[in-house]
Image 1 (cartoon, rainbow, N blue to C red):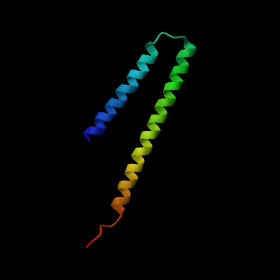
Image 2: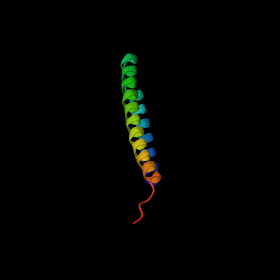
Image 3: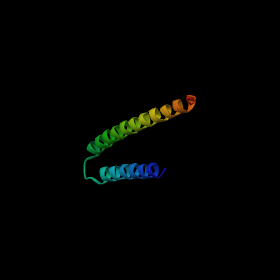
Image 4: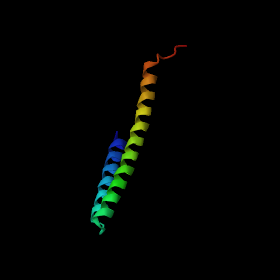
Length: 72
C-alpha cells in the first residue's frame, strides 16, 4: 500500500512539474498550445497504459480467487 501512495505522489509531482515547466517557458501562444496538447496526449497515453496494466493484474487476481484450491 505504501508503494501505491508513493507512486501516486510521484505521478502527481511529475504532472505538476511538467505543467509548470510548460507554462513558465517563454514561448509564443501557438507554440505553448502545441506543447500543452502534445504533453496532454503523452500523459493520457501513459495513464491509459498504467490503467490497462493494473486492470490485467486485477483480472488475474480475480481469476485466481475464483478458482477453487486444489486439494491433494
